[in-house]
Every structure is written in structure tokens, then in C-alpha cells.
Image 1 (tube, rainbow, N blue to C red):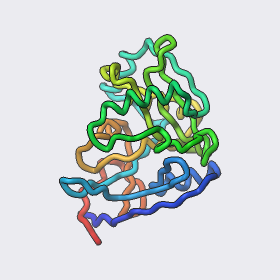
Image 2: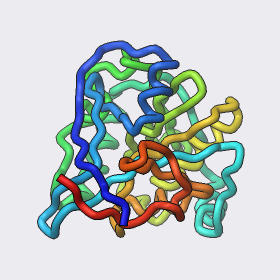
Image 3: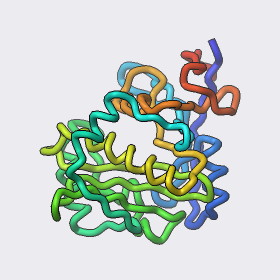
Length: 228
């Protein structure tokens, strides 16, 4: 077994250059507003969960069977892509979205985007998914020089059969491909089974090996042992 180090680091900064964002993402960092963080372990009631940053090369991405079905089931949606905002419409959608949660319920979108996502610390885009004039899902994508990182997605719980969380990820990957982006970071997942397993269905997927400080294909990652 590979020893897995305990990592729990954070710092605050208001502005970061696109190249600096690329470098931070490449070392497993993420951010919510001006707070940047990375961690390898999340403690739960059932014990530690090993956290793995994820990435893929958009140019080599091929949707799987389930993802192709999600695309077919949503051919009636329209998309708008604009600078990220905390508009009343978006905040109202988030309030409906968070009703899905029974624990760790997020208070507001500012937890993930800060008070003014258009102001930084980096460029952030808003992907709006609509049926007619109805906003049914929204996601937020940070943009660096040659990399992008998916921040958060919210959707109308009454539309859950459409798998809108997966749909917004697929749209972001499409955008990254069209803009010659080299690395797409879909966020974190747990090494074992967890609520973000839908991200693990993205292929070809890489995970960040904290022990060796490098990216590996998902199949190369091993269940780690704990070190102190």
C-alpha cells in the first residue's frame, strides 16, 4: 500500500493570474472565493475518506454510454454562457437546489463563489441551462491560461431525472475542447465510493497522488494507508 500523507492547507488571496491558477490546480489546490485550500483526508462518522483531485484532457474525452444518454435526453435545452454573477434568478435556483440536502446544507452561493465572483480571484464563467426562459440548471467554471476548473453546479430538483449535474459538466468539457484547454479539473472525489462518483465516470480520468506529488491515471491509484 502507498502511504497517504495528511495534507490540510489553506491561504487567502484576492487576485491570481491565469498562469498561477494553472499551477495551483496542478498541485491539487481549489478555491471558494478568495480562500484557497487543498486537503487529502475528510473525517466522517464512519472514518477517514481519502480525497483525490481529478482532471482530464478535454481533447481525449469520449462520453460513455450513460453520458451519451444524458446528452440525448437534453437536446431540448438551450445554453447561455456569461460572466459569473449572483443574480436573483441564480440565487433562487440555488435555494431550490439546496432542498435536496439533508445534512451539510450550504447556506448560500457565496460559500462557493465569494461575494462578487466576477471580480476574481480569477475569471469565472456562468453556464446557464434553460428550457424556454426557465433556468433549470447553472454551473460555474474558473478559467486559467490553459486550464479550467469546475466550481459548483445547482439545478432544479424537479428536473433531477435529467441528470443536470452531469449535463453541466459535459457542457463545460465541450467548452474547454472548443477553446483548446489542456486540463479540465472537475473537482474532488473520494478514493472509495462517495457522492461524487459520477465524476469518476469521466474518461480518461486522472487523480492526484498526494504521496508521490504527481498525477496518475485513475486505475493506477491505490487504496492508501494512513500516515501521521
